Amino acid sequence: MWTVCHLHGGTYTATVPKLWDQTIETHRQAVRDAALDAAAALIAERGLRAVTMSQIADVTGIARATLYKHFPDIEAVLLAWHERVIARHLQILEDVREAAGSPVERLKAVLEAYALIAHDSHGRHDADLAGVLHRDEHVARGEHHLRELLGRVLVDAAADGEVRDDVAPAELANYCLHAITAASSLPTKAAVHRLVDVTLSGLRPRS
Image (cartoon, rainbow, N blue to C red; front, side):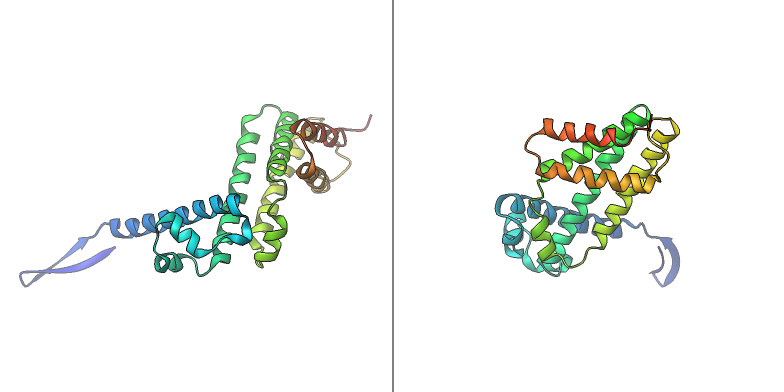
């Protein structure tokens, strides 16, 4: 950022560091993070519909006037919270994919990670989210990234001869996602792993 400064009647041009802008952005992000962390804790404790802006302000110590500068209402907070949850889940799946070895190992690792995420959430907020959040662009984006990630893994596994290639990867990804969604209703993690094994068996090449 350039500015012209006056000194003792003269002028000079100086470069002003963007430290001020960075400080404002850092503060803004800190307020948002604190609000979302508080929202997550309150949701876990009281349920989605019971969370209010006043409660978030009380938990964080952020003045309500300041909080409203960042979020116009509780729906905006919940939307941002849900976006962050989806982003973190996608990052977990990416990390799992990169850490695994062969294509079929990557496929199994991603399916298991996704199934455990579904199992741990138990769908406990799904109905409330549908009622509270009317904008679902971030959900659509998250699903697109998930299908894209899974599609890449399936393509690699098919090229390695471990996954059937007579069905389009997009269709196989759709099959996987619908099958793994059942993990949210399973009682144990052992049952989740069995579900993943059954799902993988449906992906194997025909004899």
